[in-house]
Length: 84
Image (cartoon, rainbow, N blue to C red; front, side):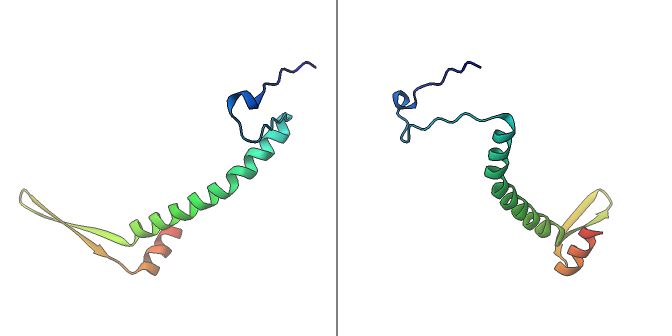
């Protein structure tokens, strides 16, 4: 198999390392590198969901008027409703 590998030092690279991976090795490296980011993103998304679920919008219609109000609800109750 032939391969053409560039010279990183000409591009101003600091470590001058170049790596060649098989597909399965590359997938493993990418999965490992992104796992912590995915976890952090899911934790933040759970916080956003909890914040949204803990609010309740109440609307009242009177003739052609609409009155909306945001009311906080019990957080534990909101979490239980989300998980159902």
